[in-house]
Length: 323
Ligand code: PEP
Ligand code: MG
Image 1 (cartoon, protein in one colour):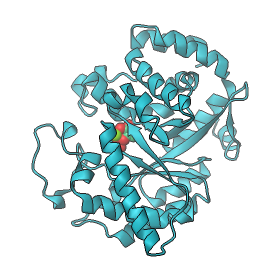
Image 2: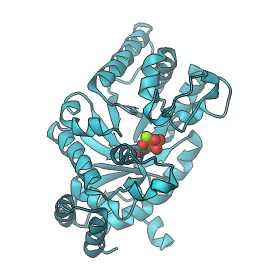
Image 3: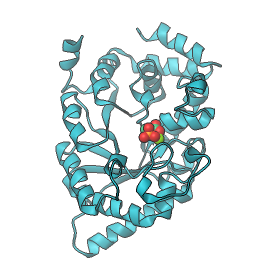
Image 4: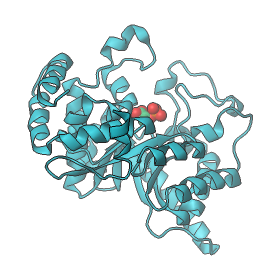
C-alpha cells in the first residue's frame, strides 16, 4: 500500500472525472518542510507560527521571524504558503506576556483579538512576513476572525506596514492574498459578506466544531459532541464554500477534518478547493480522491446536508464511497 502511495508524490490530485483539488500540508516549523516535499504536498495550507513564540522566555525578534518565513517560502519553491498570524491564547499560553488569567480562555482574548490589542507584537510579525514575501508565494491568514470589523482592522494594519516598507525601498511581493480562518460560527454564517473582502477562506474545523457544538475540543467527557459529520457542521462548511465561489474566491480547510477519510468524499462533494492536513496523510488522501467521482460526491453531499444525525451521514458515506 505504501508503495502504491509513493508513486503519487509528483501527481496532481484529480478525481476520476477530472476535477482538480489541492492537497497541502499543515506545518509548525521550517523543519517540517522535508516531510511536506517527500509526501507530495502541493503547498502549505497552514503554517502555525505559534511555535516561534513558544518554549522560550521572550518574543521572537523580527529578524528571527523573517529568517523562518523566508526559509519556508524558499523551500516551497513558488508553491503557495499560507502563513497564519499569531494564534496564541486558548490552550496555547505565552507565560512571558503576563496576560491576566481568564475564566474561559477559549472565549477570551486570543489570536487576532490579542494581536489587535497588542499591536507591537502583530506589526513585528507582519513586517517579517512582508519582508520575506518576495522569496515565494506568500498568503497571509488571520485566525479567529469573528467580525468584518476585525478583518478590516487587521488588513489596515498590514497595509500600513507594507506602505512603510515600500517607502523605505524594501522589496515586498506585489500580490499577497489575504484571507481568514473560519472557525467561529458567526463568520461562517456571514461568509457571503466576508467573501466580498477577503481573498480566501480556510475553515478551521478543530475550533469551528468546538464553537458550534459548544463542546471543548480537549474534554474527553464531551467528546461525543465533537461531531465533524454532523449535518449542522456540513451546512456551515457549505455556506462558506458557496459564498467564496460566488465571489470568485477559494476555500480551503486546515482542521483535522480535511485529512479524514470519511470527511473527504463529503468535502469534495461540497466543493472544497484545498485540503490541508498533516504531511503524512497526503498520499493516502490523494489515493482516495483519484478514485472518486466528483459528481457522485456532489450527490452524496447534498443528501448528507438533508440528514438529521452524524451517524446517518457516516453510513451514507460508507455505502457510497468505497470505504
Ligand atoms: C482549527 O481550529 O481547525 C485550526 C486549524 O487551528 P488550530 O488547531 O491551530 O486551533
Ligand atoms: Mg483554531
